Image 1 (cartoon, rainbow, N blue to C red):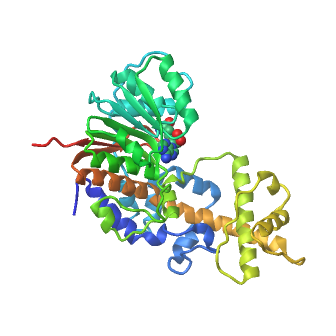
Image 2 (tube, rainbow, N blue to C red; image 1 turned 90 degrees about the horizontal axis):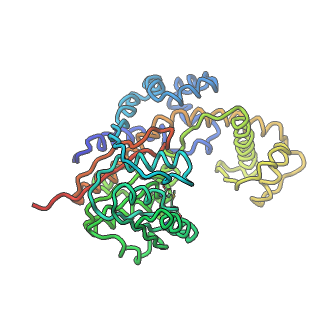
Image 3 (tube, protein in one colour; image 1 turned 30 degrees about the vertical axis):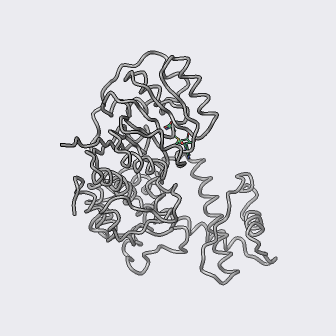
Amino acid sequence: MSGCFPQFERLDELLTKNVAFWQFMPFAFEQLVWEKSQPELCQWLMSLSDDVIECYIQDGKVLADELARWIPDAVELYELSHVTAYPIEDKVLPKGLDVGIPGRKWQQITAFNGAIPALQLPWLEWCAGKGHLGRVLAASHQMPVTSLEWQKTLCDEGDVAARQLNLPIRFIHGDAFSPESEQHICAEQHAVALHACGDLHVSLLQRVTAKQGKAVTISPCCYHLIRDKQYQPLSQIGKQSEMVLSKHDLRLPLQETVTAGERVRRQRFVEVSFRLGFDSLQRHLRSSNDYMPVPNVQKALLNDGFAAFCQWAAEKKGLSLHDGVDYDHWQSQGEQRFHFVDRMELVRQLFRRPLEMWLVYDRASYMEESGYRVSVGTFCDKPVTPRNILIHAQLNQKS
Ligand SMILES: C[S@@+](CC[C@H](N)C(=O)[O-])C[C@H]1O[C@@H](n2cnc3c(N)ncnc32)[C@H](O)[C@@H]1O
């Protein structure tokens, strides 16, 4: 079956076919997971320096070309995840509207506003925060805005800002999931959600279709913030997919590796290698092969060294450590595993955007199946926000 997003079906095929390269938890393994199945890939990965890994992370095309030696679908996956950019209309805004809005947020909002069509409908801003977007919509379209937000303080702050600017915005302090919130969704409306997490934007799409709302525009984020244990696909292709996505899988698109400075890199090395070293130690002590997650740690504790970290972690997990533990040995195990994890993550990097696009097309196809004309594209460049995809759906006219 194919909708107006033929890439979706192909992405589904290729992601399913290649699950062995991305659908696993790298930190749960004590060696490269493809040691037996792909020895040459492992050899290549282990030959890479940290700086070379950094270069591949920055250039997805070069990474796909290299990985194609072992993952023949790599280049196609890379190409399938490409989407065109929406044309951005430069809408004139009154002065002073950006006061109190951080620079990058302002760029996101003005780009979002510039990418969506002016339909002369009242707006519904879903999970509005302080209503930064709502103010821009109200000011540039001269239409009233209803802003729904869960945190009372944000509603109050948004309300004050809207009054100061004399804009027609009404804040509703409410829970987007509650049945009462449904009353704010109606047919003669253009609903928007900028970075409403996981189920919050999904529930908006479902309610808009139920009410036959005229238009909805979202920029999805935090795909893993769902109430079910696993992802519940929305569209026909999604429902027929063989993939079952856990919350861990749904985090993959969000794991953008940001180029970090030397100090941050060093800190990450210490913390992650300590955790992995403790994990190897606990496996040895418990004669078990299961990964044991350890809670967040106060960064200052890391300065006390690996042994202190293990004693803290053991206490948290109710394990007792005997006197003769060879901490140097387990620390170096952790350091070796750190290098394995980074190299497994490099391969998973190839699948980040394709999996995100699969999730985006699942939403877009669902809207299309529900009688909407749908477009998908980027509304800003990745440095402005890595969650830069916009889905716009407009109800088809009944003939
Ligand atoms: C990532 S922020 C985005 C805010 C705003 N749209 C923006 O882009 O600046 C998500 C917002 O959703 C709100 N939120 C979380 N759960 C909610 C719920 N159940 N009902 C309504 N709003 C909720 C949060 O309080 C937060 O303000």
